[in-house]
Picture (cartoon, rainbow, N blue to C red):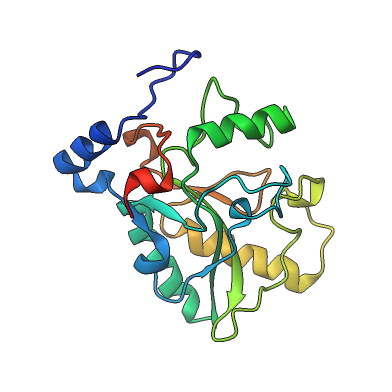
Length: 208
């Protein structure tokens, strides 16, 4: 099916399941199960986000199977430094992306509905760092979704330990091919994203 912007979009559970049957890499998996020790801080399942209201029906982080495998390797790599990943967001249904753009109206910080988001493909993750064992967040340039110049990865007016933490996150994700979106230190795209369709399925419809 195509939406009003003539954008290919999977909204049928049957179509999604057929894709998974033909190619297991298409499967959406639960990152909390797939990545040992992962910490979740899923703001869009609460009112603590830019919209000021819950946008998800479940506090769950989903991603395509290759993305989850790559994140598990990143998590293992970071453990050598005594830190791990915190996921703020992963798969995002297309209708939520549309709502974000209507709220923000800035392509630098919100994917427009005529293009869709790589989050809609299950191929983007928003992540930070935490201390292993305690789960306490490590200092990074801004809070998640703080749309200010300090969120840019080139922003340098930061303390040394914050710069180090940002560099550690970028390097660890980059070693598994994740590509950072420069306006947001937290946003990373898996390199195989073009292989996956945009989805507008709820967490319940995905069936995890």
